[in-house]
Image (cartoon, rainbow, N blue to C red; front, side):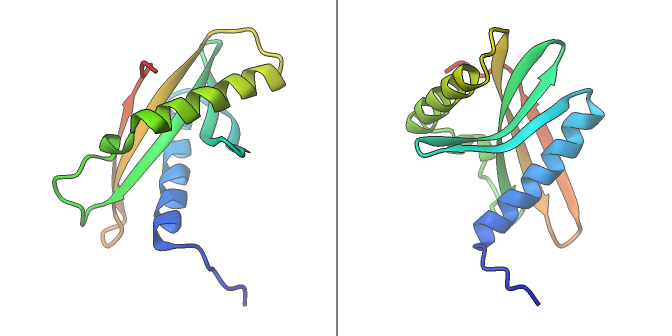
Length: 125
């Protein structure tokens, strides 16, 4: 038996990213990569739609957190780290194409196994 030593926050984040991938696929996105990690930041999902690279940040909260919006977690320092990581990705992969940052917010009701998903496209950095 393998021990799962992820924090509850990480478990919720993993569920959210899986839900986000399925949501995006149903909307015509091609998932290229998940959890692109560099020491200065991480991109949750890299996808492609309409010849545009989409860097997707996923923010998940449990339904217990009433009155809290997942997008409230997009602090200026987080956007700065994301920007640097996206630039690194484009340089590493030698991509010269259109790109944008999207935010997928997920409110998860684990008890009832439901999720409310929204996408905010083309976030300005």
